[in-house]
Image (cartoon, rainbow, N blue to C red; front, side, top):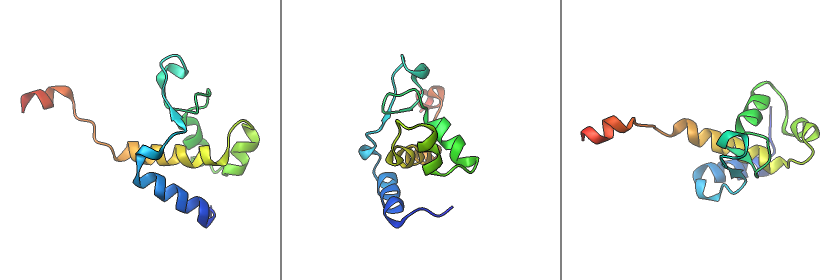
Length: 96
């Protein structure tokens, strides 16, 4: 799947600076605290799963008309950042 140069540029910019991710929210009262799009009941995992299944951002926005294409790219940027993040068990931190 090819994405436009502008969208790709935005994606790479967001990936480089996670501070700019303003569309991803986490609230314990919404979807059990999972990362969601703008407080809506659409999780980052749902978006990533749809993209992995071959759905285009345009098709996802058609299925969820309250989403914007920028939401899709920000969800992907957030997921890419989380995959690269290293989680260290607390017991290992306390040993050192």
